[in-house]
Amino acid sequence: MAVSVPESDPAPDPSAGQAPAAPGRHQEFAIEPTRSVGYRILRVIFNAIMRLWFRPQVVGQAHVPSMGPVILAPVHRSFADFGFTSFCTRRKLFFMTKDSMWKNKYLGRLLLYVGAFPVHRESADREALQRAEEVLKRGQVLVLFPEGTRRQGATIEDLMEGATFLSARTGAPIVPIGIGASDLAMPKGQAIPRPYTIHVVIGDAIAPPARTGGGRVSRSSVHAATADLVVKLQAVYDEAKAKTGRY
Image 1 (tube, helix red, strand yellow):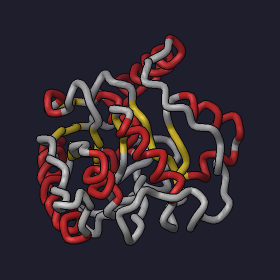
Image 2: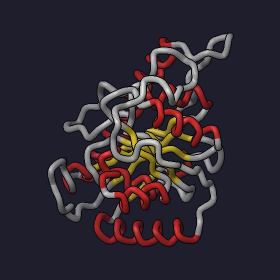
Image 3: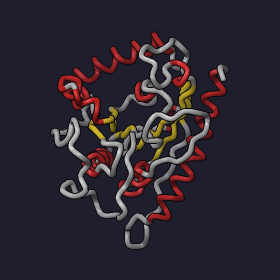
């Protein structure tokens, strides 16, 4: 998921411009870098299921930094896309997830436990941005879909600027990730995924946008970085699709 960014550079103010009340709002979100025993067990089980069903083939894991803040920026063509980022690195992952997932309080608690936090996609969600920025300032891995929501088609366009804004503010590089055939395995509206082989291509990390002499993040640098991300994300998506041989 991704959100639009505020018009100015100052840190998001949780008391101003809040998104409308929605599930998952204002719950305590603890950034725990350690992969607990419970987290590891859940991830092993989850990855085993994903491997059995989708047989993911991943290339380019070396492009994900082994330490320090980083934004993983996958294409988004399927509800299952978030699961394939688990094969990109052994590091603990933190996610922005649509707030409707918190309608079930038990699922909401589980999501918080595994590093997810809610985002309201229809407005500039300052609470989600603040949490995302804190994840990166703590040197962790943030998974953020720059397209914002699931899209259709082969073209990457109209990216939201949350990824490049956070990259500029925190110094975290952005790693573009192409996922091929997830739209065939589980297109929008499909309840049960088909067992397609999924190909994941991880691109070179993109350096954060330059800041001004005063240390601010200029709108022009965020725009330029987002345009560059479009090109890089399109390249890895095209490569991932070509590997599947199903398009």
